[in-house]
Image (cartoon, rainbow, N blue to C red; front, side):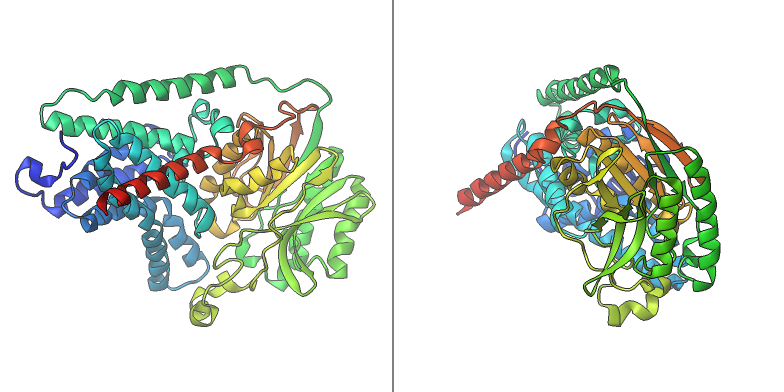
Length: 516
């Protein structure tokens, strides 16, 4: 098969509607790999039709369109809860549809770019084409996760959330290597499809890619098989899940009720005598700087005789932060973390003067300020903790940053009440399993409406409280650190992502030079 393979190789061009259907249907099924369904095997073949269609496209524009259609179908499924959230907030139906469609269209742009690169990668030859596709995908994913606004749930590795053994090598290679492997397998399968169409032999890359996938799985299974937390005195944590309706949260008339619910949970949590009590994001009904709110929190810290990590809004030096505040048993502030990755239409409103009339309660909190890019871990009785707030947990770099600075316990506090019982909170929760494995650090998660949990360094859920339930979750951390030096990824950073990006840049430069 020649490197210039396109639609004309098989006779007359295939109608666009037929090719689009072959791309859209797998995209929809690929969306079902994420929680709650978890159809993980689809990911290992689901991209192959897109790779074939993009490679055979007559023009770059058509390759872009096919890639975009595949991405749009994927995100239309996985992001449906954006529409639901808008409706919960009272946003009109037409505006909710536009918001959902705009986000889907924006996120699919990277898939369109990938479609173009798949076509261009044909110049790498038959054996090199699947590898070039995998490198291109990884470079795009890596760069977009760092430098463009994302919802964070579009890392291809997330499709394997049910398959815990497949996650384990991420502690060595980082968050993008599993996606590389998935695209590579899809690429060799796509090559096979094209070769069979022309009665060619099976490509040599098929056994190579399958061998790599098997080695990855075997390494993960061995790692998981030998997983054993160190013995020793357990460190107890209490996690609050008040299950406060998000759409009553900022009603001043509900403040007494909210405090009453939390008071009841704190009384139960204190009875367990934990080393740390973790509150969810923005759990204080108002600003923590208000004396009545700070006095309330301090009184509970003194009464329980333990440390509290409290999700609250803060005002400091004219800036407004969504923060986690550590309060010691004397009722004094012992440290704080200010959120760095702000949520559009939740913590700030782009083009506020134009869109505010249409977004209702989504802009009620006002514009927050981002915290400092580098923030040291907080010292607590359960160890040095690195905090992420809300959807920061879906961005690997924030948890890795905390681990690289010495955090050996990761804490994610969140308020997914905006999304009620849609798939959104389940997507968000499962990303914490990946952060635990990547950094080989336990994760403590407290969510206003759930899912709250304790996850061990191998990604195993030790205990959890399900979505839309009120309660106190008592969890235990191993007395000693199973990985005192952290993971290779937490020490070296995303070296695999940088490697693929560098190789991609070199290949692109070489291709441009050849055309000049």
